[in-house]
Amino acid sequence: MTPGRDATARNRWIAVSAVAFGTFLLVTAEQLPIGLLTPVGSALSISEGAAGLMVTVPSIVAALAAPLVPVLVGRMNRRLLLVALMGLMTLANLASALAPNYPLLITARVLVGVAIGGFWAIAGGLAVRLVPASLVPRATAIIFGGVGAANVFGVPLGTLVGGLASWRIAFGALSVLALVVLVALVAVLPPLAADQPVGLRRLADQFRNQGVRVGILATFLIVTGHFAAYTFISPVLQDLSGIDGQLVGPLLFGFGLAGVVGNFIAGATVAKRLHRTVLIIAAALGVTVLLYPIAGVTAAGGITLLVVWGLVYGGVSTSLQTWMIRSAPQAIEEASALWVAVFNLSIVVGALAGGTIVDALPLEGILWLAGVLLLLAGLAVWTARRNANLR
Image (cartoon, rainbow, N blue to C red; front, top):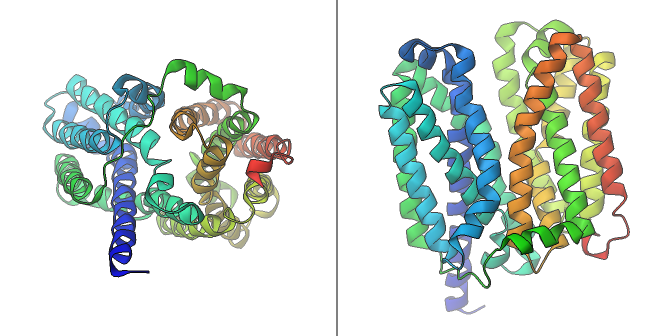
């Protein structure tokens, strides 16, 4: 390889890293309010339930924005679009930090949702345009490594800042970081012309594609099942496994670390055996969750299953995004937009379903439901075993 090509290849990986930094920021911004519900509720004189909408609203808006933003911007250069969306994220977090009342705070969180949905819809399939085809799975794993890093480092650090200083400082810090990402994207992203605009008809046409249909169904079942159970992981660990409440935080940190490892393992395996990787992920998640009421009734069993759960779930985003890319190589933006929409909607559905069931049934009931959904996802994936694009 010549020095010029070396430099070009290096610049492309720097661009991939900048996009990964962007996904890190998006997920941190989306999930940070989870650790700030009490101080926000106290400062604005609202209940923690109302404060919880700071998480739910962006997820719902992101689900709507993911397909709509690419449609509305037409042929707009994707580099410019990503920069604009990161600019919106900068302003939205600044508005959150300065919001004098609850309605303005929720309005700012709506803008966060628009930025999340639009950015993720484009960034998810960006690896194809930044690196050679043989390196796409690795680049996709790096981009989605930002998701795991946000859960392990971003959200806890933001919560710590909110506790030591104030929740407004935490949101202000996010605004500064978003500005840093914006500058990085301007500096390192190459021009990314839109080959053809994303239209509603092209979005609808993706449902004729068996691979896309299965990918969307599997995503809905996996993410819904995961969040139905994971939303209540703290009481599961304490009440079912008998683990002291003070250990829950460190254990969830371990869950996140395992997820980061799982993300890169999946990035390596999907390049060789995509269908088998996704099938194993769905089946392993289902079995792990279903084993909790049986093998997770001791501290050792609960901790072991939690680590396995984190390791396996860490590969979900990379493997399913790769599935959508392979299923629709001529319509990557459309397939990615639909996938992001379903992913974010499933987070909300899973949490709401879990909350409804946990009020009516014991904790074991929620684990059984989640496990069944995850196994059904495996069954859906199995039906696409003869799809040549997904092998």
